[in-house]
Length: 105
Image (cartoon, rainbow, N blue to C red; front, side):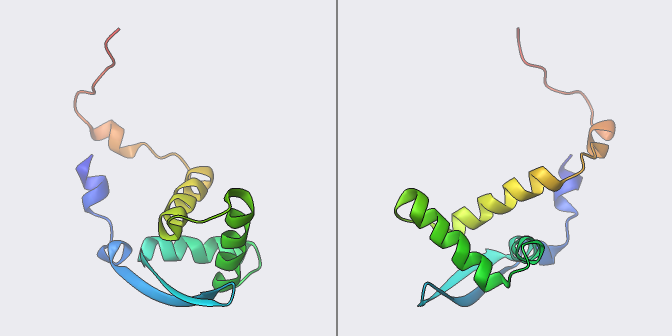
């Protein structure tokens, strides 16, 4: 199973800091490239630029929660939710796996 994780492209987990404006305030966000790629895909599907999508998301969180504690973490979790809803299940690694742990009854 570790091959599934160990053989991913290094580019995916290299981080990049991007500067942007959210509600008129300049800020920077540091995320791994895989998350930037996913956010760009989500923004594109919403017919928005990445900056517009991030501003929209930030505003919606403010409206819903009153504040945003950790926007970078929110973005990572949003990407995970998006990927879990759009991913095709391919359990190839399970076929090669040895014995599996089974919950005790």
